[in-house]
Image (tube, rainbow, N blue to C red; front, side):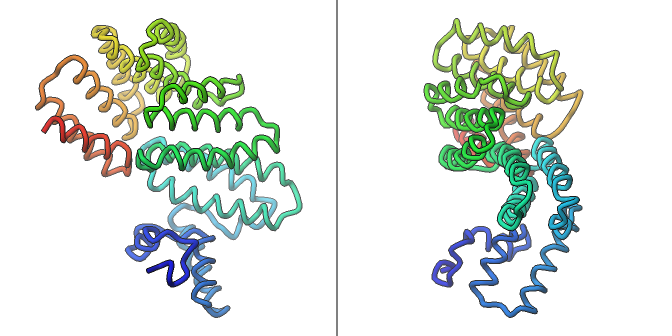
Length: 336
């Protein structure tokens, strides 16, 4: 119906959520709406002002300030950090909507500015890295691979223009991580290896190590898994708690694959320790998911597994982690 009305630039689900007051249009989507409905100039100005006012209210940022070159870069940097924080502490729905607003604003600035294009593209690359991280919470598993690849290609183009190995490695890492989630472990290893160019940011490099170690474990490459496990264990005490938690969770699940029960539960206790140090809902989801996998590996009872799966599903639904919702629903079909 929406396409017949000419709304080809706006997904129908977005329109539905906007009408329900669950999200805002991005600036680009608002322009599609204005063009499609042929809204008068006073009406256009009123809609744009209303959107900008609501963005300020929700996110504490002013779109108007973005058009001042003096403040633009500082505001973008600040908002990328806030988007990362929102996603990492367990609010991926907020981070998703917020990042789509900033993405449109950066593109508009690139299109109208003749100055400092390199810095604009660099900021866009950093934002794309955050959006790719958000995808791992917000995309359904069946769409994650294709959507990640599409966005990563945009990031690769920017990285090649800027000759930026950090952004290039980040793009390859995210493709590899999406393939790992999709179960295409051999291809995941290729991209994860490709991303290891010595220039990855700390967060992405540690996530690469975790995913690569799990690929080796699930492919049955025990010697290589143990080598990577040793490398990860040397890092765990040298990185921030949230990153340490992810590394320990990977070791717990990898050890469970090889039935190293004592070692797996020791790693899980390290996850719990890091969670208690710096609690957030995403970290709690990570811990609970690992607890379930260890429970399956070491034959914990169905009622135990069902109880944890229900708790994890509730958290995933409350905080908008779509992939975990799918995963827990599937587990509950098995456990009852």
